[in-house]
Image (tube, rainbow, N blue to C red; front, side):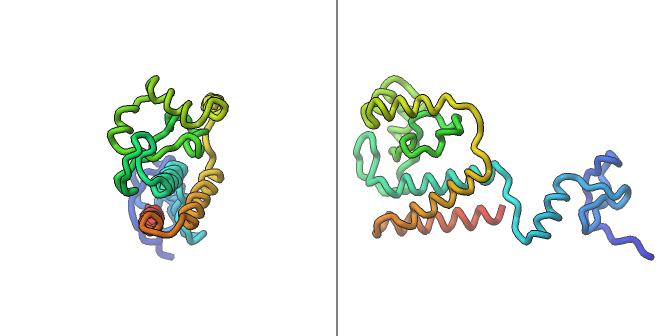
Length: 193
């Protein structure tokens, strides 16, 4: 009986060195698998690429950003009419607060100068946000921002699907065409990762 031919090299935890890896993902010497090899084998068995949490969050945010920019007719702060590709998605409260990163009241389409002027968050920005949303919605958003935790993978998948649906139902025109083309390229690039 001949030994299987190794395909590549991997770091095997048991051997504590780089050793040849078999087609199954196991180390040719000790037959243990590193985590990346296990993921590759699982992905091959399922027939779909496994998307990690960070890539999924980026994909969901990119789709959400496209929808935010496509629905606005220009900068929401200075009211300058701009095409969606010249707008930026800005957060009322920092996107580091994962719970409200995708909250509809927390994301606005701004031109680059307005976005730069109010990042990081300052008193003028908070006043504009309070005026734009109204006191009750602004206070509710502030309370939500105090929550701790992380958006799980299932919620990110739903957010990505929700953003795709919102893009699909945008009113017809150049903005919708731009959004659909942009979302298609994002999804295609996301599948390549």
